[in-house]
Length: 303
Image (cartoon, rainbow, N blue to C red):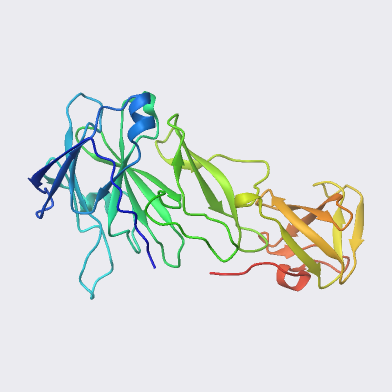
């Protein structure tokens, strides 16, 4: 169940008629500077409230109002109204590639990904189809809305959600220099999450900054027990020396390249590598590749 924090950072608040069509409040946020970014952003705004902010850096504040939920029980929850200066944009954001599943219905946010570029962003948080949290970002260029893409997780202060593995994967934070700190769900071996940074690319879309190795959120490791003999490599190289982890022996999984190699430690604390095949779902053994669930006990599998 969602838990929302009733804290909104606002510099000026006066009653107004919300652009979404309901009586609410108007908040004014300053032009984006490094000091303002540090002190003010991200700024949470109640769903349905109006906020005034200079989104495009032209010195004039836009009026933003966003309603993040459809209260009708017969329809899919969605952004039902997204207005900038009175212009309805909800259809345009979906046409631009945004999709919603279970939108956060109490807050949206104004953020500042890069304090040096003079622009602010509008962030919409979503709980996903099965607690796969994500936040979508939008920019206004003075004439049209732009969808920057989405990152995993939602902003701190809206929900603190500890998953079954015992670490928090909900918080999206910003360095003010163009990097969004978050996490990514890994694609190989099991269900697990790694700390990751997201950055705007030359195409204007947010993308994960590639890493040689992805380490689980919070420094988590995965102790496992071999269900079959498993091939261990001395390096992440198929030509490197190999040994065999015998059935019943222990291994601790620590990281992955999210493609075909997994870094681990044996019972003596020495580093070793597992090689993956079949899209990262099977593990090399002396008898050939077997599915990860047949190779190890202790892996996490969840939807």
